[in-house]
Length: 86
Image (cartoon, rainbow, N blue to C red; front, side):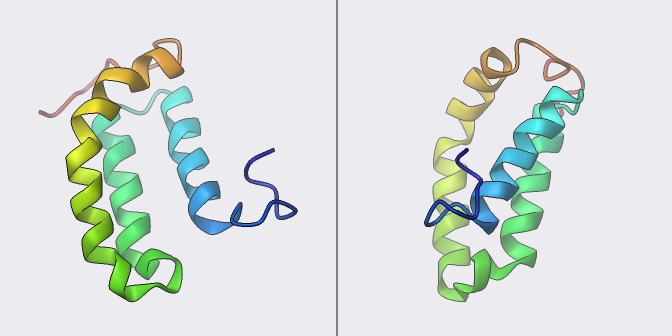
């Protein structure tokens, strides 16, 4: 499993990303999923890599539209169509 502690690099940020996808599977909207990911990234200081917070947020904004388009297909439509803020 990708989030396993046995997989190098499979720790905090990978686990947080998987939790964002699980949240979508539990019915959270794409907007809520993005807010959750942003909150984790900024509050955890990019897993201790403080200098990566800003560049990581810039990268996230660059791929956000693509995530919004494909997230529903990953989750089989479970809840991610609901409550899209914008």
